[in-house]
Image (cartoon, rainbow, N blue to C red):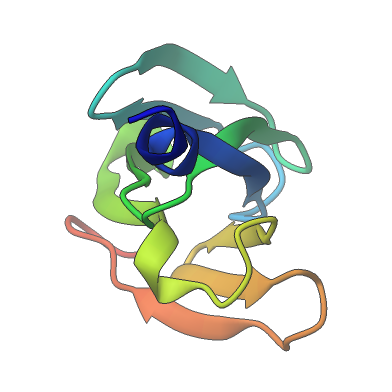
Length: 125
């Protein structure tokens, strides 16, 4: 019984960061959640970022998602999965998200080139 509880506790840490690279003068508003936590609302200027570290569940159950708004009057929006434990090889991965005018891009551990992942809803820049 003790052995089972050790293996079902949280394990290594992971992290993700969202970078506002839409364009100068444009704000990014972010609201992130997991099944257990609500990270609240955050606003970042161009060049700013929002992110945090967390403990990844040893059974790959960790899931975070974010709603993002940007553009003039926050006319662009997207809902994205920012971290899903079963998708990443290492439980200590840090995932970078570049929020741009044409969509949202992902890079894993800073070792992979930016890859387009999500389109915006709303009027494009």
